[in-house]
Length: 117
Image (tube, rainbow, N blue to C red; front, side):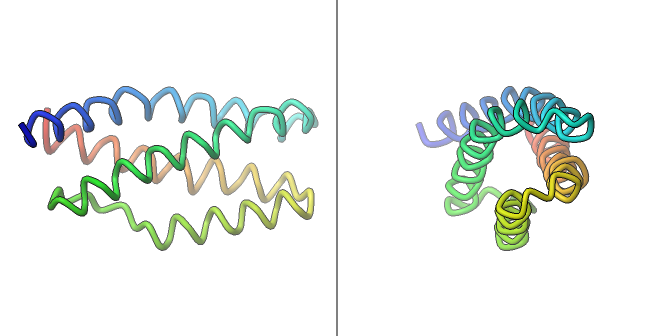
């Protein structure tokens, strides 16, 4: 039963990550093209999505599934994103989203894909 739940969780993560990456890149484009208000409207949902993925990965790691996502590093990136948001530094925010968050999500996606499918 536990194995089935693990596989279902991994399948869900693999299904969601490409959608979140795509949405992240849309938000990045908003910030890069001066459409900050659109980016800000959508970023709240992104934070919720990131949180959901991180929680699922942590749960998998706690039951012994080896996923190399560095949660501490990711939390540091989230803190930097919060600071950039507070300072309205949309260049830094879009860089963190595009080059740190998307890369981390792509790495997790590829790792899970290789390991399980």
